[in-house]
Image 1 (spheres, one colour):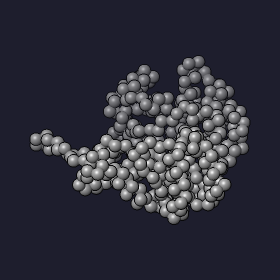
Image 2: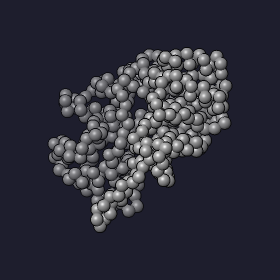
Image 3: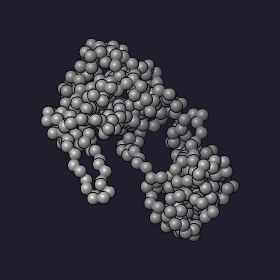
Image 4: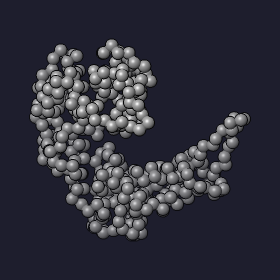
Length: 376
């Protein structure tokens, strides 16, 4: 863990406090961090009846100075943080929304702190669970609709249930965190215009033919639609993207599975077509077809013959690969792609996907580079 001390990242220098927690030099703790520590404070109070600054710092991997600040705020504000009170005081009124009708007349500060604490403990919690725990802890009985409205309309952001990212637990292993920080440090010193990314995508015909029809409101009839003969086929795409060069996106699509030999062929084809140029940096994930069997010497071959540097992403970090977002563009555009009349050739999916990928622009790629954090 000590190897991380002083490591430069795109957001600042990483330091480690006396309890093993990471923080960025000169950066304030976020509201979420403050709520996390405050939640742990209340948990320790409930379990042991008291909570010292040292115990809270060790339990949350934060510094004593920070936990002492949180404890003083909680004691001063009757269990509430300054950031929450400031937010409630200064939050703007939204046009068309009467905030007084969404809980402010029913929930006092203690109720709201309990609701926020419950959400911090378990973001997947149901409204019925909020209702039950709120009653047990404060004696306040609120309807499920009132709790839902409070989350939706009482703050700057709508506290609705949304689809979240699933993070494998091994991504948080210390060695994987170290690789992540090392990668960001390496990328920081490179010319982003020379960094290009590669990846694979499995494309099902059903993703193209999942058209919906509107049911007849009078008869209830739902008409069938004619589709191409490769309705159930699956294709595999090898793609590369970049924000500079002769064109923004290169791809190879086929109806068999990917292996190391096929991938190496696609890389060589990208070089011959002028997509990968001398001096480029090709970034890939850690898939076996990128590193083993026919690809075991790919790194040396690219550098020795074409002066192309091969760099691998940290484990479990698809958010660092902009091409993942381009795959999302592809699927979304396939859903609205006009196929015309069904054909018997059985290649509608491949034809449509290739047509869409050939129309990817530098603007599309710049957009996903920004989303992945490579461009400000």
